[in-house]
Image 1 (tube, rainbow, N blue to C red):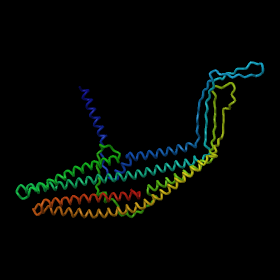
Image 2: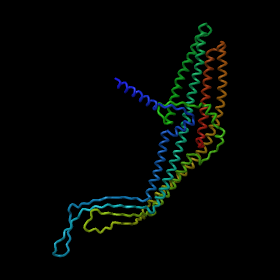
Image 3: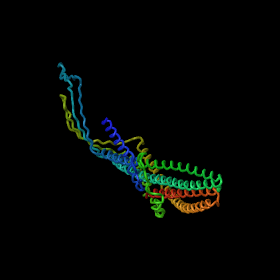
Image 4: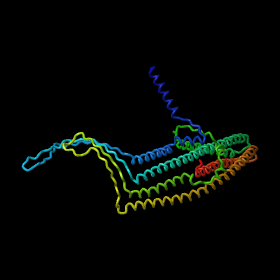
Length: 433
């Protein structure tokens, strides 16, 4: 019985230890969330692995031009076969059996000249640079996505707070109206209208709370944590907005060479140019040198093969019926296509810059307008609520003003979100996230 009790206690300890480690609590600011995602986001990890693979590809290409050593062993048995040799007329032929043979051979090869090898080595290094740029782009996108998810969670939580605060006010008015109805100072229609308003706000609160959990789940995916991880955001929208330097963002010019998409396009242009060089180099000869040493374990009776051998081999492409020219032309066409894409990207980035600056300016103006509007709506609601308690206005008037105030709060939060999104989009274009 004691053994069973001990086993149960140990099982509970192990289970509790596992749950403690399985369920992780995170308290994160916006910057901390982005840093955490850069370290643990699975998409970014794959981008890092792509850099490692590209580095190995450079090493593979480089190794092709270094000495190559091969070894082989061989055993031959001719199954008793013989050869007949006559040394003169009237003489019986001599029978010489084929003895088993076995040898061990070592060969060392060295590439001496190959134009395509050097171009291929340069191309592999450019491809490595391309994967690094792709990683930087993925990192930039992860920063943007985490920020957007962070904003979405804060907006949802703010919406819940607004609705719950509004719900408390309406419930208080509803209770007071009930008491007024009980003493004949209010009508039943007033009570019913307020009850409907309470029900609508309760449903809205539940809906927004579910949306908040969905926003948290999206943030968990981007952070690379499990679904059981509890996340606490330590910054509010107002705190984030106070740290945003909109004037600097609007005054920072676009430098194309700093834009990550433009950098990737430049690298692709280099790759296309190297492809032309590679096809041209295919018409040059390839020279290799080699050394071979053969050690014979089982020798035949007549062995005239020397154990050491050194030599050179040159392969010269002479005529391919126009195939090489066609490949060079294809590479040149691809290069021109890349140049056109680069010019198109330049135009798109410049137009996008203007549009994003317009969006940020408009979002800032809208935010200032909604900020003033919500203050006015709050004063109107408080004033009308006081008049309602004095019996000067109807419940319909109060409900209408309450809805207007709730809409103003929602519009203000939305305007704040759009302002942060516009700032984020422009900073991403400028590569200043």
